[in-house]
Amino acid sequence: CSHLDRKHSVFGNVLRGLDTLRRMEQIPTNKETDKPLETIKIESIEILDNPVSEALELERRRIEKRKKEKQQLVDSRKSTPAVGLSSTTVALKDVATLKRDVSSKES
Image 1 (spheres, rainbow, N blue to C red):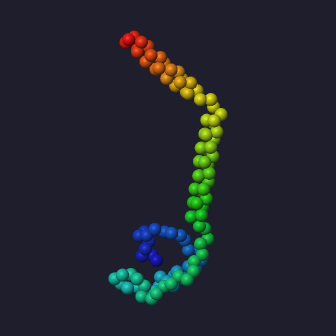
Image 2: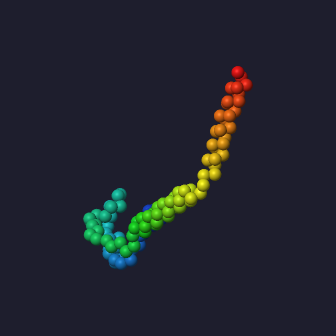
Image 3: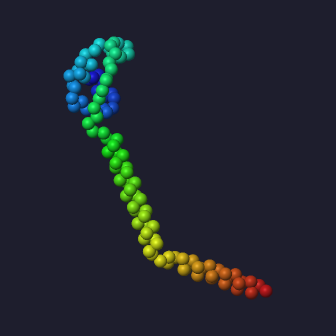
């Protein structure tokens, strides 16, 4: 279908049955609509390489990798002592002490 060249997306390549495609191209078309004057029915196709299954597999691997990374992060946090927690506790004690000191000075 040379009249479609550079006008439409390509979804694949014809590897076998090029003679059938050539016969379909020879069927006369309506000059206004460019539709074939005879009904063309594709009865079967064979997909030799399915890009969808490859994409699904890549996505499955990406998700698994992300899960492992998250689990490693959780595990590393469990094994590392909470350093920031003690300074927060000290800061809270300091605030409580400050409040107590201010209250005693006001009285």
